[in-house]
Amino acid sequence: MLTVDEALARLLENISPVNGTETVSLLQANGRVLAENRYSDVAVPNTDNSAMDGYAFRFSDVTGPETVLLIRQRIPAGHPGGGLGPGEAARIFTGAPLPDGADTVIRQEWCLVEGNRLKFERLPVKGESVRQAGEDVEKGDMVLSAGTRLQAGHIGIAASVGLTHLPVVRKPKVALMSTGDELVLPGESLLPGKIYNSNRYTLRALLEDFGCEVSDFGIVPDDFQMTCSMLVDAAAGHDLILTSGGVSVGEEDHVRAAIEAEGKVHFWRIAVKPGKPLVYGEIGCPSGIRRNVAIIGLPGNPVSSYVTFLLFVRPCILRMQGVFDVMPKTVRVRAASSHDRADERNEFLRARLNERGEAELFDNQGSGVLSSVVWGDGLIDNPPGRTINVGDWVKFIPFAGFFRS
Image (cartoon, rainbow, N blue to C red; front, top):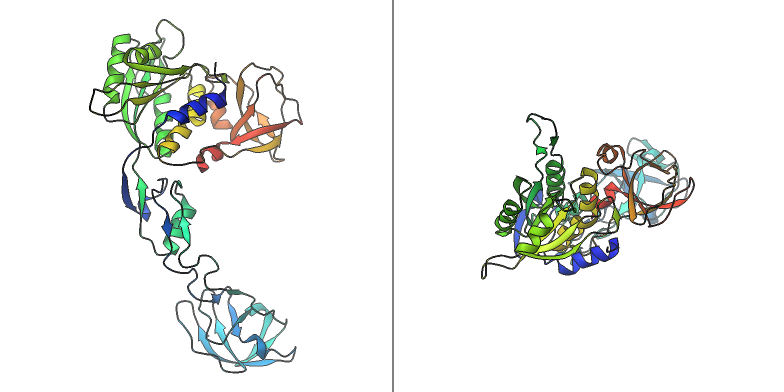
């Protein structure tokens, strides 16, 4: 079996970036991956402005505690004022441009105003409460780099420099299917021996979270020929095929054999818990139409499917869109629970942080217990052969860390 790191490296070595870009408005850019660097044509802010509601003045006019300045103008945000003469001040509001001659703003709470006379209850510091032109972004700065998965902050800074549209990588096209005679859809009768197909909904939501265009091929029966046929159909017009179930060693598990029949298996089985029977390969396309299409077959147990998607499918999808740093964010925390049964595989244990920032383990770590994912807020990455005692340092991957990149 491959280690987790070996499997991920093999996947990323073989995944090809998708071809094609499109230009979308900022309102449609959330979650997309930027295709080209973007630069600013303006400085932000584009002029010195006030960081406070208060009074703007020339610092050199303040000679001591008894200084009195005359308030000669009022400057709201969005309205430039006139120049300041010697000994003058301007009533100014947050975001308003500083008048010519002013270099300092004192907040209104530290002033005493009598008519148009301004006195200081606290002596100011030169330049305080002033946002300098270009202190956020200078004209010509690169504000966004290609390969960035755009989120709220990225879109906000694009808007702040006046960009209205962004070039993004086209969405990867993913064919999704589940296998198993036991599966029925929510809303259908749950006859003896049947279970509801949660993987279809979980995986589709995850694919959409990471910017994919999903074609849902539904449920494939436990039949070798039908599995082969569905994989060949799915290869046409897609960048990736994602399946769940049918990848283990049972007589009714046909996905791996179908991949071998219609393409090539690159590897099968990873030293990971949950999720050992993961298969990665490619399905051939008719000659002259396009290159072979990558396929990842996930285990059918819902937690195994969820965890292996985050560990292996997510990095591939991001890399297909040009994201370079695809590793999730991790933190080191103390364990609040013990785990006394070491496994030969790399375990990913569902856990959540308590009020002290310690990781508590979910009681039942079974691969079919999807409630552990809902209860938890991350995974403990536990190396092979290791037990965990209360107070031990552990590597914790918040679920939010998977979605940050």
